[in-house]
Length: 265
Image 1 (cartoon, one colour):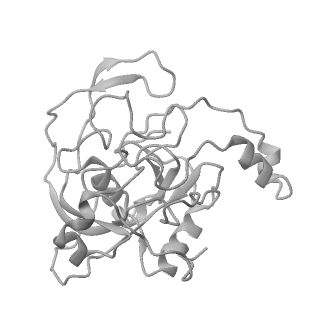
Image 2 (cartoon, one colour):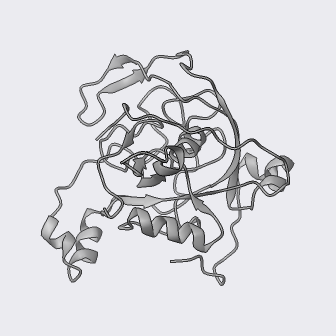
């Protein structure tokens, strides 16, 4: 649903909120992302893990960008939709609905490249917090609960089934789960829709999911799930929005990101 005008105003409490450049460039509920997006970056595992779902305990540092960096400057929601601290992240929303909800508040669904840069930060980290999987400041690696697909499909039982499976935390529960640009919960909590079509207008996989959810999955910043179509909706799938900056600083349009070989189902 669109943001409720009667809801309490967003009150940021992190170090980014006092930055005058951020305050001038983006609304209070959004973070400023200003940096170079790397179109080709390989995450290399330096230490394997026996844990199911992700397989890598620590990634290699200092991997160079394999393509020409693309300068970007834009705003991204600090939190998952509805982007209000204390509320529950919205899930069971498909890609089309996510796009419509972002448009309803004057924003857009984030490009996959925008989401990735906001998560990796200027150091191009595989996780918002660094290179080592654990300990993690984010909501990841909780034990998976088998779902009942029939209960999920049936509108009469869906809400109860989502509640049974639910292991996401309220927005703002993990203050240390923050990227270098000031966006929270980009790894874990809920999966987030991104707009691959905006990056690659000729792709046959327009709807991508990034960040992973609370379960034992990879949760890295760059790997995307491309196997679900835009009508897919599920108990752990949410989103956040992006927007252009509002301070009048001119920025070049983003270059296309053609990345059809990278796929993480």
